[in-house]
Amino acid sequence: MTGDPEPISADARHALEQELADLREERALVASTLKDPEEVGDRADQADELQRADQLRRLDGRIEDVQVRLKQSDLAGPPPEGVVGVGTTVTIRFADDTTQTLHIGEIADARDESLVTSDSPLGQALLGRHAGDTVSYDAPDGKATAVVVSLGTPGDQG
Image: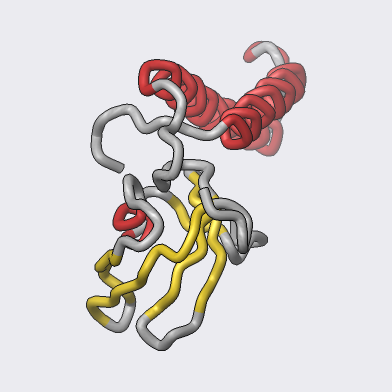
């Protein structure tokens, strides 16, 4: 990302808001399982409590990250039309003439092979670009280039 607050699409914002609601729900569930320190018994119970407390810290950290990102997106305003941003679906053509439709997101998801994070080398190269632009980025095999074919779903210019 550029360091400035990046705009996000309505769909990406909705996904972050849903993640925030899910995180808060999970946090409430984990917090409800914590015991009063005086009630903790043997070492196994203490270990369980430490593990839940660590889980709470991780959840609190992610909740804070999502809240900050939502506030930043408010400052950035809506994403400009026809420009690659977080939440954009973009079709690109690689140097070997293959094309791929990708979704620019913020959080890696191993289940979504079409997702490219905005902080990855390709994601960073695509941010702010328009259809027809050529981008260069660092790939595992070295420098690579790709051309932005279109934004939106395949065949949908814009």
